[in-house]
Image 1 (cartoon, rainbow, N blue to C red):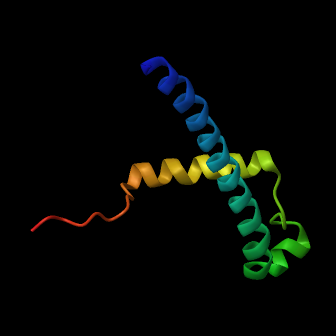
Image 2 (image 1 turned 180 degrees about the vertical axis):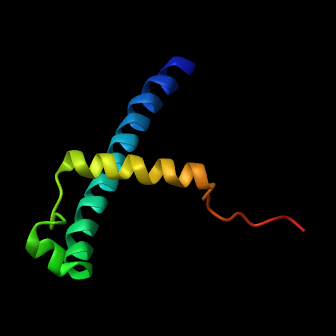
Length: 82
């Protein structure tokens, strides 16, 4: 009985992890294309800053932001018990 539970949880967990990963990359890619051209229109026109980024660049940017958050200690606020 325990093996059947394990066989269902592992693939399901893997699917959830992959889905979150793809959604995170999609958000990075969409947010870049939405905000950067508005923030730096002259730099995008001159080619100094990319107006859109590739999936691989979105992956690198997501890893960089995750490492930066880990180093600075950014974590969700938890409610302390009184």
